[in-house]
Amino acid sequence: MPVHDPYFIAKRAPAAENADYMPVTDMAAMRAYRLARLKKALSDRDCDAGLFFDPVNIRYATGTRNMAAFTQHNPDRYAFVATNGPVTLFDAYRSSNPQDHLETIDSYRPSRFWYFETKGDRVEEAVEIFAEDIAEVARAAGGTSWRLAVDKIWAPLIEPLTRRGFTLVDGQAVAETARSIKSAEEIACMNASLAACDIGIARMQEALKPGISEIALWTELARTNLELGGEWMETRLLTSGGRINPWYQECSGKLIRPGELVAFDTDMVGPYGYCADVSRTFFCGPGKPSDEQRRLYALAHEQIMHNVELMRPGMTFREIAEKAWPIPDDFIANRYGSIAHGVGLLDEYPDIPHLIDWEETGFDGVLQENMTLCIESYIGEVGGSEGVKLEEQVLVTADGPQILSMYPYEEALL
Image 1 (cartoon, helix red, strand yellow):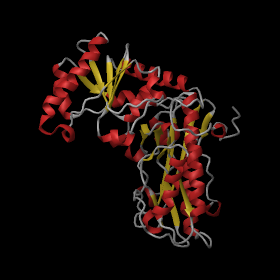
Image 2 (cartoon, helix red, strand yellow):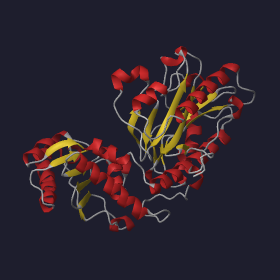
Image 3 (tube, rainbow, N blue to C red):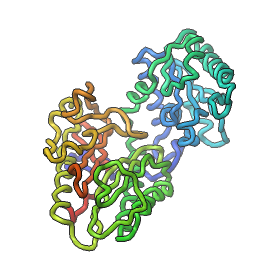
Image 4 (spheres, rainbow, N blue to C red):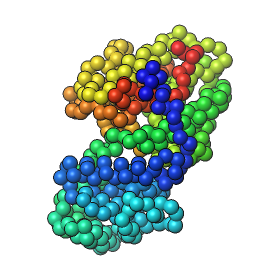
């Protein structure tokens, strides 16, 4: 890999499709890799099996998706993964399509509706049926008294599962550990998502004219994501002018005026279910940016470029915090919440805090080859008139960090 080209990997994005079983890259290899990673993570934590409700973890384990946003809050799909045995997918909404025949799934069973919306005052009865289903597949896999990793421990399920001999442990830690190291096929899928994201950003910049509303501008990104095979938007973080400061306000009907900055965070789940998490700040013409706008932008860009270079194998999270770009005093109070965070199917482990926050939120860990991370910057004084948000998505390689997001920075602000 030519080390002189920071976009070498990004330039090899495959075509965008919207399902894991489409033969754009070696999807069977990706599914096998992900399931093996998940089973190893279960084994490493002495778990006999995992029970996964989160649709992102179900997709990681099986390569299937079905109404992901809906099943984030309605537990109508779940997967039982035996560490040394079969995978059973419980689904209330099966349909005849290619993913019904994936090699990752040994058996299908109908899921059980047990929560209050569907059962009312019969929840207690319904959870017994649910728990007996899980015990039955565990017994079939050779289990009796099992350590069961559960990613979402719904309160009504705890007692009937423990009464059947399961010891419940944190399944999200298992899943996030597994998901943190990417295969070549996963990187290809992430690149496809980022390619769709770059197109969406370009369409936003083209549409940016005085008088367009924040929400209309954000819609250009959301529309592009869906049009190119993406899946959903995690947030609506796009603001302009004074609404950029403080950060974390969602887009509104505010009309964007000449001379304002416009900042956004894409936070999109794109093709193949992989996250494209990039931030840019634009200048809305006509005219030229002010000296203050250019100063804020230059500081944010300097922070990003400095911290990207720290993303190398063997760097501990503490070392990164210690060597990170020193935030000027005027901007510390309004700093972004972390230096960097993992990214894959969604934002994920690890979240690396600033040194000033280490005592409260820091934890041990080390960067490994083939981790993917987002490097964050927000520069804006408390009470300031505007701010700048930038973010880069990178791959950790033996040759140094590879930038996967390719959209250029704003020339007028640099």
